[in-house]
Amino acid sequence: ATRALSSRLYSSAAINRLTVIGGGQMGSGIAQVAATSKHDVTLVDVNQEALDRGKGYISKSLKRVAKKKFADDAKAQSEFVEQVMSRIRTTTNPAEGVAQADLVVEAIVENIKVKQDLFASLAKAAPEGSILASNTSSLPIKAIATPLTAEQKARFIGLHFFNPVPQMKLVEVVRTEEASQEAVDNAVAFVKAIGKSPAVCKDTPGFIVNRLLLPYMMESIRLLERDVASAKDIDTAMKLGAGYPMGPFELLDYVGLDTVKFIVDGWYTEGEGLKGDKQFVSSGKLNELVKNGHLGVKTGRGFYDYS
Ligand code: CAA
Ligand code: NAD
Image 1 (cartoon, helix red, strand yellow):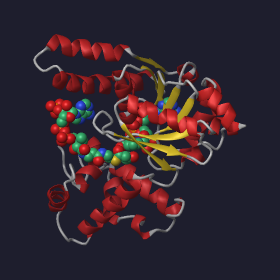
Image 2: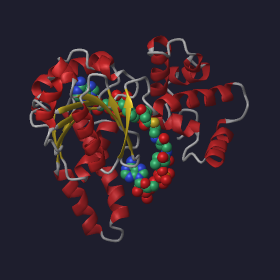
Image 3: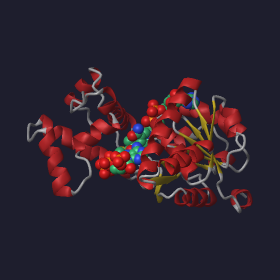
């Protein structure tokens, strides 16, 4: 019955209208790429300042893209930025923001309770048949979906973008056991329509990328703690010896040390199949940096000093 219902709801459902909840680093990037690929975008955040900041990130990033795309043509550059920006409307009212959406992508704070509460109300306000998605880095998709009905769970998935969104080509499409094939297929089609490449995976901690990246980051910190080499030499080694665009410490500082600590602590204490896994035991060096507010690029200091 679920399958018959969902094929009716999704059969001709090209995704044109996207609503992004959360206009921070990730949400603004998602809004930007979708608007660039001619989707109608609604960006929702808690207050007007947050929305203004989000629009600021988008226009700054679009100007960089425009400079590359239309070198030596200032008029074409500003027209491009204006056109893309004109496809993004903003609101502080989530229910109104999702009322016309084909797809809702949530990119708010990484807190299970806050995400559950948001979806409990959004699922009622969004159109029947719309796809609901979370951009969570580390929380189980099925745990976020707890307050939803069976019908809503069939159209609830993970859509995990990477930072910086305009540059990173991958989007993980996370399929829970309850998600319908149609919802997954439509999400995959959307990812392709915004010029990204999808990788479909099951709902397990860290999905694909973070499940491999976090052990690598933690072992890099432990190499430093064991005084095997300096952060700079470890970074040079991985860039020149393994072809990574950033070394592990550059990437740690870029992602944010608070984020990394939040993910590994969560997995160590309650990650499905990861609880007590020594790869994720906390690191003295990481704890100390976070405690002192040295969170990486965003605070001007992490493993490196950016001041
Ligand atoms: N917006 C728009 N354009 C951008 C941009 C942005 N934010 N960042 C870069 N660009 C474009 C610009 O056109 C830029 O040219 P200008 O500098 O002339 O404006 C061009 O890209 C090249 O920029 P850079 O020289 O800065 O680019 P680079 O070649 O050094 O690559 C990078 C930058 C893409 C970030 C690269 O270093 C990289 O891939 N790093 C690894 C990032 C990564 O692993 N991200 C995943 C983190 S984990 C995650 O996100 C998951 C999670 O859940 C925590
Ligand atoms: P951020 O702090 O930059 O932005 C979060 C935004 O959400 C803020 O603008 C905040 O005002 C808004 N917000 C908070 N609660 C809200 C609510 N109830 N309703 C509407 N808006 C609300 O965070 P971010 O780095 O963009 O991360 C957002 C999500 O994306 C998190 O789940 C994170 O795990 C995930 N993620 C982050 C990265 C990364 O590298 N930063 C990568 C992939 C996924």
